Image (cartoon, rainbow, N blue to C red):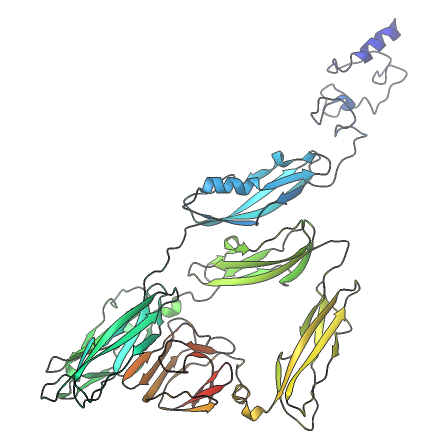
Length: 615
């Protein structure tokens, strides 16, 4: 009877597993002959042996439950799959909630043992603000039943769409109407343009300048200026030439002493450098000049201010001239943030389903800007191939830093990455023709997976210094997996004395030094038909930085053209400036800028000609 009772107990065990004691002859009966202490273990003390607990919640009592001694735990975490870019841009005027939901739903997860575990993914934050512009770092995390956890980070950029600049520049003309008498000389005209959207000056183009002072009549001059958004403004000036009479129709001339732009750190530091005013009839009328400081007052905020000088002669002819004051410009943040990538290299490889390297951003004023970094470019770590990613970050003063990164997704079991060759010295290398010496190649180095390779790349190709021409030296190297890389150095052998780029050593290896000087003559070297008719002077003002600090004024009688522009790299290696819309045939273009003794030299980047400005 005892054996029968034990059998009945075993048959009913699946429904009576909550019993806390066993008094039958079975493996769990301490008094039985077949007692098994290991199977009788009850680690959590709830009266249920470990082997009969439903730990995985599948409703079946078996050894697949994690607490079972025979259960084999999984050590492989789940794998995420994503659609689209890791960074999504959402305009604040759009439905942010819907866009963010779609962004979150583009992530799925699978586990090698548990299958689809997408429903187990936790997302932080669960929502983003529809009112605050920010780059939100979104964390996706998921764990399988054995506690193996996988985490990825993606980014959601909520921003306000910019308002398009549709307003053209303001063109400033010293006199809208100029009255002249037959035979008069056209007075010097001051024309400049400022664009509020660009916060910068614009080049002024003279569209017509036919004024014949030998004949009475009304002549029209049209000026135009275009901003960086392509908006163009026009302004008209009238020259009225009358028959000879005693009437005075010529406006006075104001000459400012000192620099056109003055830098001060406080309002009290500013002291008017002085000015003079002369008139064709009244002579010296300096005492009649009126100075209007406008909004440049004690307590003004840092920035650029205009000081207007105005004078009228006895006949009522009036003229104005402007000076600029930059208040506390040195305290303004004009330095871009710095982007730093882990491992330093911007060209690297990752394994399938690997993560891109961490990129951080720091700013001298705003500190850590890592969370503000934006990344663009298509990337999918589940597909083999090469991807180009661009990281950008902007500080609170709108200075922007950019980093371009090349990531190659590879099969970890197969090396498919080519070595990286770095050519030592100049490329291209321009050298003088030489009938005695031989060309000395400085060679190249190579790295494979970040490690320097030895021996160095093999060079092939020759350079004949005795013969003018262009030559190539090719460097080749292969890694242990057979991946071959090549790089080419171009060597140009030429007659140096005829090469303006070499003669003046441009582009130079250092920024342009501070320079505030006026040049009164010029010569043209090289092949050019450029002629600057009526040239009077060139005022070149540069104090070594990039902010409100570059003024270039070219006086070509009867016009004074303000050519100030942000299209310059004077503060960088290989300093250049770019002119456009000057109205002088052949002058527009980009020039390397350098000093040669007391002369200022502009060399056209094409090397075709150079303008040498002399004091």
